[in-house]
Length: 362
Image (cartoon, rainbow, N blue to C red; front, side):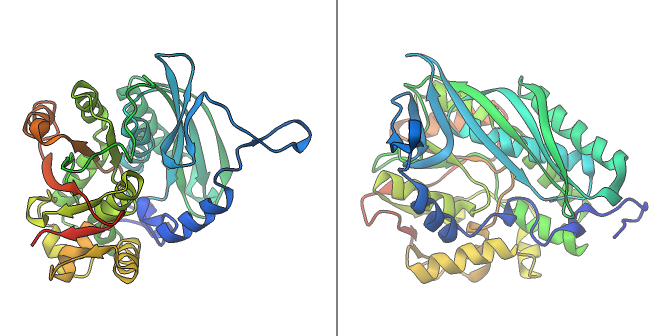
């Protein structure tokens, strides 16, 4: 389980790396349905108590909870952790922290405070652990937030992430269901990091492609969230373990709309097509795709299997997917490019139709 330098290969410790280790989307939805709407029990178990300050919770669920402090300020509260997606310990720490912070950005917020969440195999020792935590601290510092504590356990599979608390104007929250029919769908980062992560586990990933994937995953969504706030957007999410189609499915369900995707416009990391042809697809991505096809909410319209898998590719610290009024789409993409999200592109649109359905544009 060691690399060429004798350092343990972190990706060999998990069957599903990064956000590809998420529970299946349909299973999570079924489980959440059993607790959604239960609220908080009152004194003596008198029943659910509704708190009007809770603007976003489980009913309906979104990328993070939002709790209003006053008319202009609200907390954004989330947590996220994952298994290794690369073998470089410091890079994995940065990626995992950036991924956790992304949920704050996906709500249009700014991170304030974080706590480490860590599971660590005893045999890996302290040097690698210190590198992971340094990487996480680096991402938190880049976000302008504070790292104030955390919790750790001994675990046979390495796991790392954050609890993250941010702030947002409660009148300007990005919501999964905040888009409208006719809105353009803007994706801010390229797809393919799940494919690269699988290639890393198999020892098939070219060094330059790993470098490109790490650069994408460690890039914070701070600038993208700032552009969304500047443009007055209200609809968006981040693309992570359920891929572009899985997270777009959540957006369309929440908005009561359908969507069309233009596969040719979807940005992707260079070299990913070759890895897909070699069979480097995360199990979680294939599971998401097959479930979407079986349920009938995704119509690939003759798109080849490899391209379908890419649209379902499990992203770790992926980009934001924003619903943008069509008259503002070009300006939003231009601003994203100016701020460093150079792959940002219009990849489709929200349309009237059966809620939750996604079709590939013919």
